[in-house]
Image 1 (cartoon, rainbow, N blue to C red):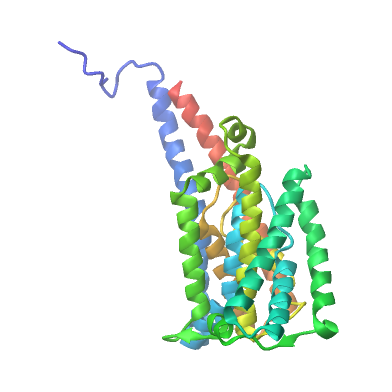
Image 2: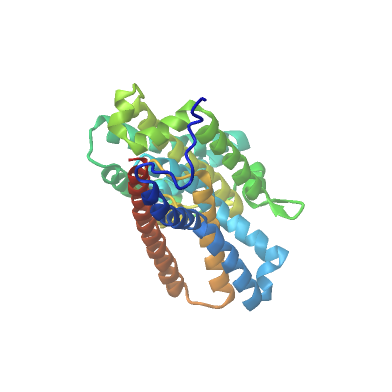
Length: 352
């Protein structure tokens, strides 16, 4: 009679009682991990429910449209920041990059009344700054991208102020730009559709293309990725170019919404995008995170600010509130890392 390989529940397999002891603990940790991964989304849902009860104006279509329009820039740029953080990096220049891109677009518009040319100018300007960040970081062998992106933060802001006539806002943008950034379709801001389109592209990039897998591999274990033949330098350079390009897209949306270009646009945008990624549940340790983290975090920031505005809370206290949310999100990331490490230990013990 053949051995089926299946032992009775009360068999004398070594470690059988050990497995029974660890099973509830593993289940608890697994549940905790799932709860933490859904934490930002659950917080967003609860926040919307509470705010809608406190201020009925929150759920009015006009206000919801305002939230979508105001969140669009953060969401698009945060998607690029997400890729950089996946590789254990950071881009502090996105806000100044956006400002410089709008100024370049405004200057081009003064010379050429063409929507296509103006949009391309802003997109290429953003991607160019991203390329500078990536090239200096990767081939300059800097210890961390914090250094070069901090430098370009200052350089881009200075260039934006120097190039802008009178160092101030330039009024006017082509009709197509204002339609993309400030127009609506069936009551929904066009900027929302722009965010949705880029979200789809990023989803395909990270889930269906080999390059997306490389990003996770480089962020998760750079040395292992290099030994596997993955072009680590090329991947890093590409992520910074994409992040800069996203800043250019944000420039198009913001310039279109305000019908203007300004060297002071994008102030503290770098902090908003980093906060959106971390609040959404991604990790600074790299190699872990998905597109939803950036989008949920961006919407969460937009909802918090809109709710505090409706409640008449001073802008300084709004900054405090966002800071507290960031602290909570970082602590949640620390707890998640601890639970994951504990789960791996328990799984190893069970296998043995």
